[in-house]
Image (cartoon, rainbow, N blue to C red):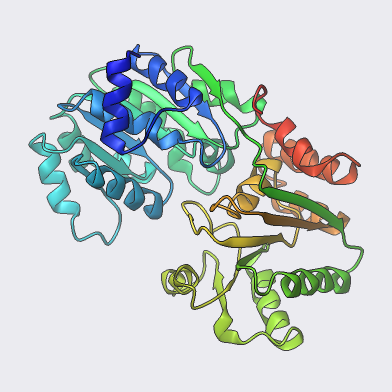
Length: 387
């Protein structure tokens, strides 16, 4: 990347200079190399792929993302930089208009969920454009969700392969396991991707784990943590199942004297999920109790405490949950509560999935049993060479 190109990118997005990680990724993308970029929140992964729009203003970049919140955020960032962008999702009144703009080559960036990729109307509109870059953001979803929860992730590679031109493919995440890199590259039809690893450990985030022998002890730990952080910022409590979310809410109301209005809940079966999430985002509710359905694309700056009240299904899943705290750079805490019953429940839930899922559950259980520092042990699970 030349100094002139770097200056153009910085001017386009209102930043003073590029970080070393960003320079390395952008240089490879500009040279036509596929890239897998791994770095923590705040390292500027999105600038890496948005910069490709500035370098190819007359062509199209397609971003594939898991949530509407992420899409909307990126569209807003593009519009702030005078980039013509749009996103497609269910219930969006602009969907028809966006397809029309795409047909006539009037978009520079399009953001979609993987489920949209099999829409024949969208495909015809895309074919009217030259696609220079395909971006798969939060690419850990490919390995965590593709088998059951979001099967369309398996079709992203076919979509890329079927494009008439051969775009550069860029994939990004903060949490990709070392052993998943080759799987991601193969699934997305990446050609010898350059792997760039930025900083993965967040110095402002403290991780702790506590073995809870009984449910009474588990709830007691939750109560103690909530009281400690009551006046420090917002709190998120993660539970494994929908029934656990409901029970945790009842406990906070009945045993912790927390008003119902201060609590929001989120899970996949909730009819008013958007309303509940908005209550938490706006600050009307200071505590969110949720399954892993809540979080992707969440960028609330003042979450000070994350309580993962039961053992998650992988180290990556735990670090994704923990990573929602302290987005403002101030000190924050993530507390993992676990026991053998959690471990067995997870094995029972995933018993019919693949060996990789079982290995991931076993890996996190081993980390919890060890005396190693939790933060260091989690980081060790991911692709190496990060700081």
